[in-house]
Image (cartoon, rainbow, N blue to C red; front, side, top):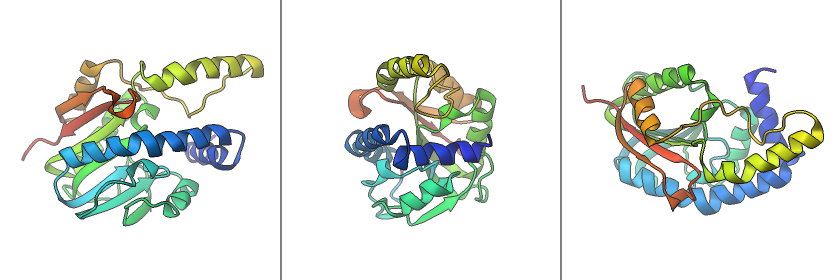
Length: 225
């Protein structure tokens, strides 16, 4: 099955299909837990003006309380169905774009900041490093990427892994709530190393109750020219 079809079906199952209950709970987590965390980190690490892109915005629900101010906020995603749903949300993105984060439709040094949540773990390590280098290409010197990157020891794994195991046994085939997560971070040190391998200067790698221990928040800075 092609990547785009996998993601289209994933979002459709969460919104209208067999995983709709999980979709409701996931939406609640995005709105109640992740919104304040996204607002905190973007306010802390992003400048007050420029163009900022959520790379793999999904429903964009976790970003609805970011203060735009003089910032131009853009959402980009691979899946058209979820972009259509994002249009109906209250997200502050002025534009929503279809695109692939491996080949971004932005010129070099164009963006003042990048952020995403639960995206990077779906790409193998080599692809993840290439994506970081693509982020680096489009960011201005000194600009920052804030990546909410799930680790292997996150609270979401504590809750979801046993359910996935039981449902896999009952079905007789593997069951997962999300498309394959092949690149979870193993530690803060692994997060720092991954940022460096992508060409970033690590500013912080945080694992805190602020987002209910769901992500390691990896913050990387593009070196100044």
